[in-house]
Length: 484
Image 1 (cartoon, rainbow, N blue to C red):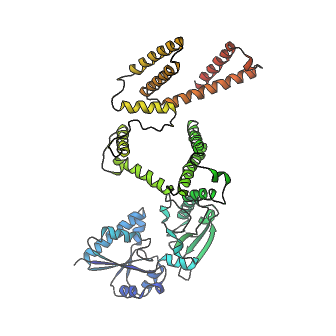
Image 2: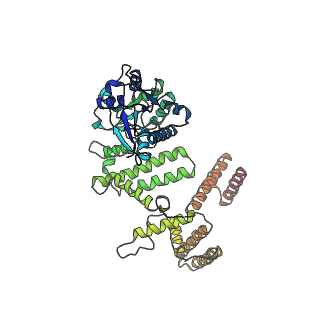
Image 3: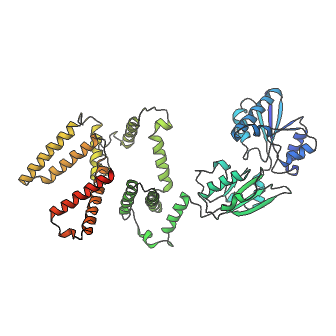
């Protein structure tokens, strides 16, 4: 029969909180292994003459806690190879914030019998001292697991093992990215002992206190925490009877111009490389998503959770090379995989899919580019750049003929523009962005023209076209000088 490892919880403080069964098992053992001797119960057991061998020395030799816990687990394996029964004691409850017990389950439980002996945990004492019911909601996170976990502020947040001021400072900075600077924080120490202490501080002063191995940081629920759930709650409030008259009147249709406007303001911030403004504009765009989801939720059509679930599943489904076994070599292969899966998703009951399925609301240049890329994928394309270049010359001549005859001008102008977009595609340029850049350039030069004429005391609108051209060339020349 394999050896047995007994993992015994010592409770959060001294022997008075040790269960009778655990005390008897400890007293009956020849030797006890403790994760750390820096615990009130271990100190009292040793004072009674019980032989305890701690792993504190490993903490001084290893560069990280992960390495410490791995080393402890390996040492326990060696003891199990020598003895039929090994006693390992840990602070608190073995299954609450005890990484070594998790590793024991992963690395030793397959080869040896592992028995967990429960005990009172440090969180039990927190419930007693701060007088709250865990049914209201509790989140327990290690100090190094606070980033990017989506703190909502709806629950009590418990952060154990804040050993020193350095860790406390890191915790403070992580929390201040979500919680208000003035949020109340409880610094609890040595709960359940004669040295029990609770300090209440604002978050921005949290690391001004004293910390040791028995310190736990606790934050009560806070409705001011920055979170996605808070955004959706604000939106729901604006749409409620007590909300905003304008927001209450909006529909999916009335919000369409807002969605388009906010999208283009994001593009403008990107073009200007204005990161401060981009942050704000992305928030405005996100508001539109949340707004439409709230409207749909009120009609029981879908809600924001459905939106999130849909995009998460789509990203996973369309990236089998990341979340599955499929292999791709290049970025172009990724695009082909994405398009293939997209086409499969859009197939109807007859197994067919519309060849052109772009949104009809796309700007014309983007729509033309997408259409040309789509037909190129099935081989309907020029072999080299001479093809689209020749097509532009052909369409230009046809436009000239249409102008001279006064027939078909609109159609021929459209053909010429479509051909120019095709040339942009061959040059690996985005026609929409190219045109926007040119518009920006034209506006800059025109404003510079106005500046020159004002300096010369001239009324620009009264100038003949020939003089306007002179100022245009002057503005153009200065722009080239500035570039150099």
